Image (cartoon, rainbow, N blue to C red; front, side, top):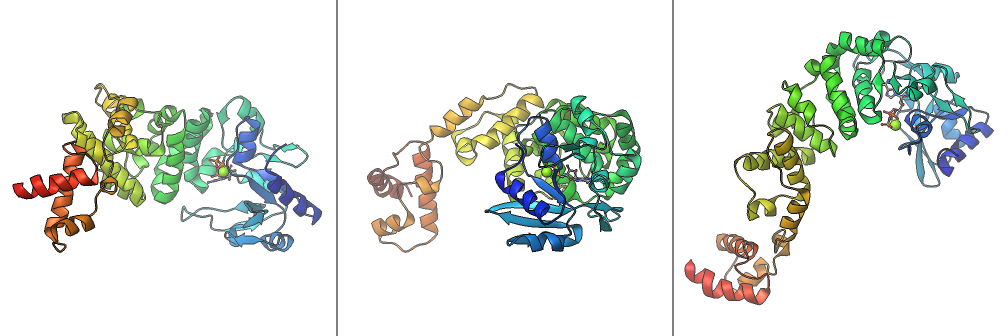
Length: 392
Ligand code: ATP
Ligand code: MG
């Protein structure tokens, strides 16, 4: 049986109220591929107002676009009214959506045949564009006329290659040719939409193939920031995480972390991660890691750096296990792990807070990290009062 019990209840309730309701989109595709679906989407002939009248607990997710979030027994489920779309002239949202009552009309506006499938509660698959045949032959094919569809929304070209990466499928010839012809249109897209698709692309097992296609179709030339040195870039796929993908783009493109973060509007956290990779990558190009390096970094960052050292620089990398051990062996992992706080130092010395306090804590941190003293209050006190202070 498909879907969660809550999502089936949503469909049953809509059906009982006299509306058609079906599962659609990626979840149906993944189900037919025997994969665990991520988010479950429901499409219905009911208008947003009608959907809201059927359920007690709903949240508006942009009713002008037809989507209502139904909270059923604590589970949020997106319910979208059957609709057609016009152009995406701002390349963010369709200019006009028109609600319709025909499921087939709704499926027609979808990007690829494998995403234009619907599943009824009784298990019947609605497949007006032969999506199932394309699933079997592992093909990404635009619904209808590829050029028209990519002209309506240029993001579909990026989505095509991200599905190649995630599903390991091939691009159907005319779909690929249309991308090669219209790739420049990607320049007009909002970068947030591109970034979302790239995060998914980087997670795919066939990222290498997708990057190859980005080059062949010249999408590369239209993207905000993209490595000129494609061969290197392509060789470093697949990635273990989206951030490894962004880091790889940064290094093979010879870009700075801040440039990548700015061009693709990465989050602060993502920018900080890239900055750490940039720093430790340049460290590793010169020498092995020191205790300080292990202390200031973490396993995830250094694993990404090592991958780049191997793939991009062709050097021997340090194994993940070695990195893990080197970090685990450290006596402390941050200042918080120290057995003493500033308060104790003020008490021992009977001095007020001041510049000396930060410097002393720093010295203690260093001494503990390098195992000159053990991370124990008495040992630290002894060292601090009798060795450190005398040295000062
Ligand atoms: P995923 O498993 O990564 O969520 P998905 O196919 O569900 O993949 P979504 O971005 O969640 O992708 O979109 C849900 C569905 O909406 C798609 O399957 C497709 O039918 C339709 N869709 C999404 N974006 C577009 C678009 N730009 N143009 C046309 N149809 C789209
Ligand atoms: Mg989805």
